[in-house]
Length: 112
Length: 113
Image (cartoon, rainbow over all chains, first blue to last red; front, side, top):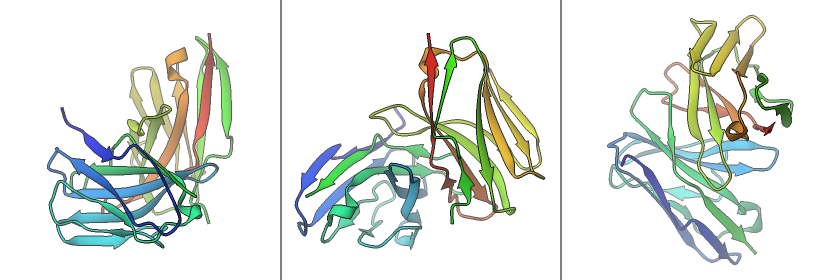
């Protein structure tokens, strides 16, 4: 089954404790992206990657890091999480040049 | 500055009636528009799209209309069903924007049985 998977689905952590949210897709997509969804703000792009070893900032990259060492994986790293990063995070992927993106099920992160 | 605007946060309609969800945009360079549907505890799923060279695209009960001069698009659902109750996001993209999508805030549709 073609899909985008994210882990963990739910995470509660404390300020400053480094964490990684994994994202993997099995569709051989070149393009992958991370979004966060906040009430009243919709979906905002954090980082995206056009292909292996090619990443770039989205609209709200502060406090996040990403890497793309393999085509199928695109982890989101929070080196020192803060409460304002409490949010619902989505990973998405698509074929190069396509518009429709396929989203993962989401990771709900709470930083206390 | 929000480039894609969904000004109504919610909409409630009776089952069987038409649902009309509106979306406005400010960037005249956007040339492709999409609607996504999101249920609780799930990721958004693609619903329907339209290119700027068209003014209408239809897929079953779902039709998207684009008015470029007004920078406005709308999603019509006819007839509405209780299973359509979800959050709907409007999104837009630029040619050559490397698949980047700009999303609106979303609108919560409730279809009453």
